[in-house]
Image 1 (cartoon, protein in one colour):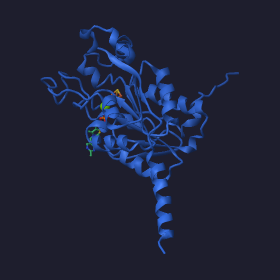
Image 2 (cartoon, protein in one colour; image 1 turned 180 degrees about the vertical axis):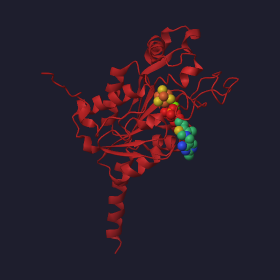
Image 3 (cartoon, protein in one colour; image 1 turned 90 degrees about the vertical axis):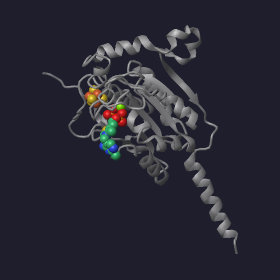
Image 4 (cartoon, protein in one colour; image 1 turned 90 degrees about the horizontal axis):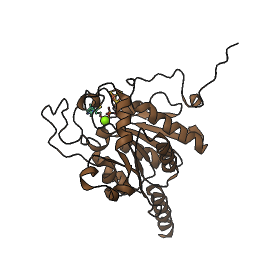
Length: 282
Ligand SMILES: Cc1ncc(C[n+]2csc(CCOP(=O)(O)OP(=O)(O)O)c2C)c(N)n1
Ligand code: SF4
Ligand SMILES: [Mg+2]
């Protein structure tokens, strides 16, 4: 008799698993990395809440993950998550957002959350483009790229999103590509336990929209092989000749600092102090 074996991550999904991503999209690798990290940590899934932006990356947890998932307006995922964390500080909150959501419309929310060191984990799916809306230029799109809105080539220099997070004060920052799935999973687990704002940037293939830009349309394997060849630990960049550095994708855990006060703890402390002061007034 044929036996059916359930996938070990099946328990984290509600009902039918119904992903709308194009085939070959990096979002599936990232969904697995998140769920494997949670599985390894052994924390009850009910203690997690996910907040999604608008964009293909927003559909990683929404509506499939079988816990609280807020799928909110474009650019506002970090703002919603900030409110949620302040109202329910015991929850582990993971935000799934695109590069456009993070650094264009949501740029201000993003940098201020970094500065506040609020205990949130951002998984930023950096496919270097607006995937969902048809392949428009994003603040992360490489210089010179011909996208639907830059048909003669992008004349703006891109943000290095991890460096923006570091400069704005995020206390844990890591970057991997979807080729580095194992390292990604480990960093996500670390980020979930990190008592402060953690930012995980994942360079991820969008074979359909970004594939058009680099002429590898629908070829996810070529894109993954490209990540394999071009990614290098940021600790080794000194060993590279200068003319080779630009081509490389620097990966690794850039920052981990546990000595900065976390925002919800600061609010708790302040509240206690305020109540004590009220009590001492008369
Ligand atoms: C307020 C608002 N502005 C614009 C849009 C249109 N819009 C939806 S997703 C998106 C960009 C998606 O790019 P990104 O955040 O990188 O996510 P991806 O699809 O690449 O994962 C835009 C401009 C919107 N839905 N709401
Ligand atoms: S458009 Fe790109 S990012 Fe969006 S689902 Fe398709 S492959 Fe993935
Ligand atoms: Mg994108």
